[in-house]
Image 1 (cartoon, rainbow, N blue to C red):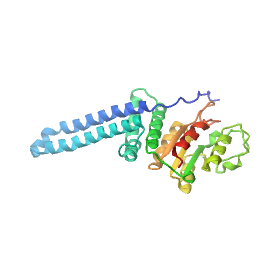
Image 2: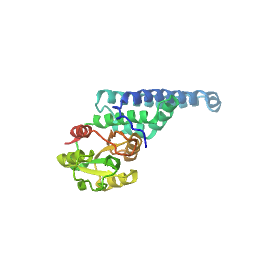
Image 3: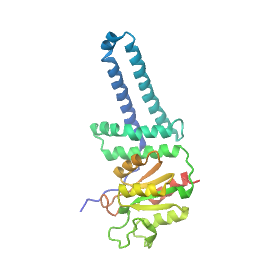
Image 4: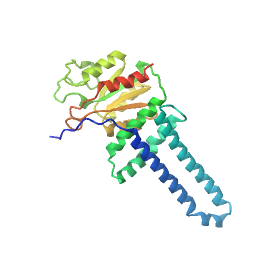
Length: 256
C-alpha cells in the first residue's frame, strides 16, 4: 500500500518568481555570448554587422528583462499592469520547461516547482479582475476525490451523488448548486479536454495534483484556469481530498 502523504502545503509563488529571474539572467547571458563570440567574423563580412546584430540581441535582452519585471510586479501587486495574458502564455509555453530544467539542476523537485507555478498562474489570472457569469464557469474534478469503494460512480454525472458525506464530492456538488455552476468529474486529461470543448467555459476552476494541473493549464491556454491542489492522505490517485473553502474563495473572486 502506498505510504500516506501529508496534506499539500500552501504553494508559494515567490520560488517560481526567483527561478524565473535567474532563468531570465541566464537567457540574457546566452544572448550576449551569441553576439560576442561571432563578432569578429561578422566584422569581416561588413563593418556594421556587429552593431546591427548587437542591436537585435539588445532588444531581445531588454524584452526578456522587461517581461520578467512586469510579471514580478503583476504577481506582487495583484494588478494587471501590462500584457498579463500574453506574458502568462510566455511563461506557460516557453519559460516553464526551462525553469523546471534549471530547478532540477539546483536540486528542487518538479512538484515543488509546479506548486509554485500554479500559485503564480492563479495570481496572474486573478490579477486580470475577471468577472464571469456563473453559467460560463466550469469546476473540473479528478475522479480520485470519490471514495474508491463507492458503488455510485459520479464520473460525467455528479448529480448521481447521494450526498452521504463520506468524501468531498458532497460539499463540491452543494457548492456547484449554490452558485449554479457546471461541475464535472473526469477520469483523465483526455476526458477533461472533451468536457471543456463541450461546455465551452470562459473560466475553469480545476482540482488535481501538481502534474495534472500544470499539464491542464498548458493545454487550456489561453483559457484562464485557477488550479487548486488536492491532498493525498493515502497516496496519489486514491481517496484524495480537497478544501471546499478554497474553491469557494476562488469562485467568489471571479463570479459576476
